[in-house]
Image 1 (cartoon, rainbow, N blue to C red):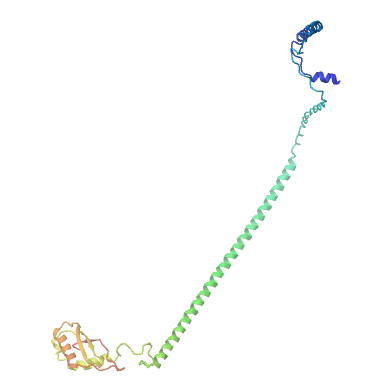
Image 2 (image 1 turned 90 degrees about the vertical axis):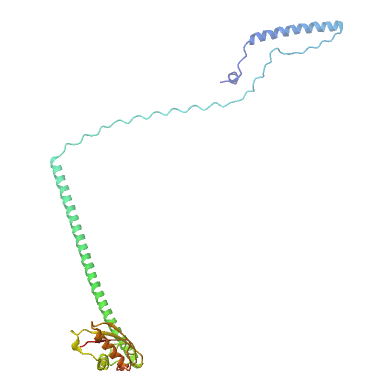
Length: 284
């Protein structure tokens, strides 16, 4: 393509009525030339100066400068659509072989039986292990129980030994401090708190001679219980009838006899016990 063709291709379109405008312009210019010619001649004759201004009835814009424009790159060739793959028909499965199927079924059965046997053996081994563990646990519990019994028995024996040693120490300490008990006494006090076995008989022997009463005047052998309080030297301080025998005469005779006695004897350890509970019966 030539430069002129490119210019025409990119030139602005021609305005409408260009022919009429061109004709009008030529007419105007011709009249202008005639007027100028007449004016020049008149000036020569009359020395008259005339000025004229040229103007165009229709303004026209200048055409743009020619610029070389690179032609656009050709459009890319269209990508051909992928051709569909031909459908391959799957081959038909071969006809089943009855002998092969029977052999395969037997093989599977043998494998399943083998797996069942292995699982049974594993279960048997697990049961045997659980049984051994239970037996071991039972034996451990029995051994622990026996050991606890031995420890308990040993602890009881040790406690008895310690108690015997403590009693022996207390007895020895009491003996060193002047205890009044016999060698076979098992107490730990310095002196026995109660009267000796013979002290009651001694008290009754002291009081009974002072009783003035006829036992035949009462029936039965009811007992009169009397509480007696004494001073440290054996002097009787007070006496009180705790339980009546049922015979007022026998009760009064016992109380009068205690008043006559006045002083009780000392016990084997030199003490006079107070209070004392004395029991008197008419036929004793």
